[in-house]
Image (cartoon, rainbow, N blue to C red):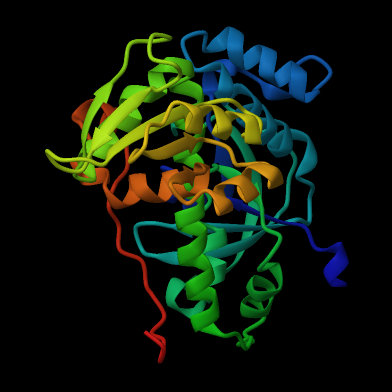
Length: 329
């Protein structure tokens, strides 16, 4: 079979035994009923049913769930490959889909939406590259495997593909960090719009060792936070913006206009800076600009010292990831 003809899916389960003993793959959201009867089967139909069935769930979850359910019912086809990492035995199970979507609400298992599968191979996780393992560690229940499909097919046929494991380890570690940064910035953008972002930035500066005072809204010529490293000057005037677009030069100029001799400026945004704004920062080193990526990096670095309120807002768990030793380090 030509590589271009291969379609491969990854799937996760809370019931390894159902998948392996019954030769099926399955997906949840049982309360939505028979998914083959969802309107015209469009993504919008699935989103609407999800929202009706789970009115207390966050609206933002509907598109992702709708996409997975529609893929399971309509986009998966007989002959597609499927990769299922079983947690109990730390194996990677590779199979081929043999049947269409079926709804069995009284099958005695936790999942009602199923497809039959022929399992072709059970391979230890340690035989795969770190990059392949990272791809099947998706946060989604059901997803397309695109980058490392050839490696899974090669392993299925008993071949040992060559790869640079150090390179895939580094890429996987970087991907984990970037995904975490995305999660942080999305959460801040969603939960701390406008003025609510200011006390968060003040708390982060406290975690970094600064003394801060959040200024009254609209009452101090645009200065959102005043910070000091210790009891003595210099004073740092902090401007915080949670707007979606890039920060223009005029906003930096406005911050500089509030600064007295000896002051330093700090501009914090969830987005980035326009080219002219970046040039302005380059020629005015007394103002430091922090963009979204840098802000997320600081949050990761000082996360353990953030207030409990903000740790609850951005729930993170410390994990260890492999790193590649470098002769230059």
